[in-house]
Amino acid sequence: MSELTHFDEHGESRMVDTSAKAETDRLARASGVVRMQPATLALICDRGMAKGDVLEVARLAGIMAAKRTGDLIPLCHPLPITSATVDFAFHDPDVLRIEATVRVVGRTGVEMEALTAVSVAALTVYDMCKAVDKGISIERIQLEEKRGGKSGTYLRDES
Image 1 (cartoon, rainbow, N blue to C red):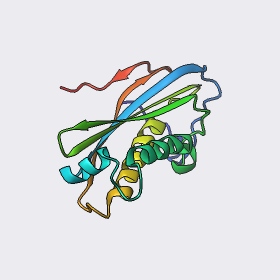
Image 2 (image 1 turned 180 degrees about the horizontal axis):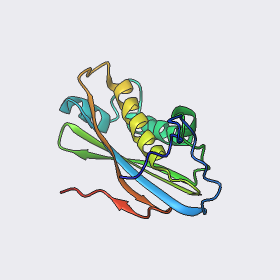
Image 3 (image 1 turned 180 degrees about the vertical axis):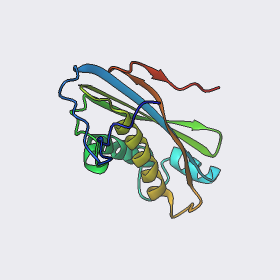
Image 4 (image 1 turned 90 degrees about the horizontal axis):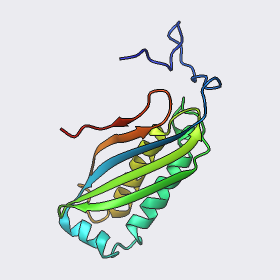
């Protein structure tokens, strides 16, 4: 494993200097799982929650979070994101899968933006559904893929 880049030779925190890096097309894809009672997921699917369309509010929250990651994570660079998507899939009667894909043409990657998008989308699902299901759990938020930059491509091995 390589050296941690957010600390200088004295162990002090620093923002990584990316000025010498080349701008490249970068992509990151992250996912997470929200587990809930089957009746709660059915309400989401039927758009029956009193607070409104859970998935569309969560989608917007995730996209907005990706754009604000530099404000939330202390040493993240603020990035001019060129694309952010948040998608949902229903796995089993009690599992909602969230996937975010973020792109930028820049000097640093967008892994944190994709992970933040998934996290905030999942938290939004919880917020909108907690009145009917306080036992909702948010699980397995993880990077699935990253492309671009010096380190090249990463693709999660599911085995």
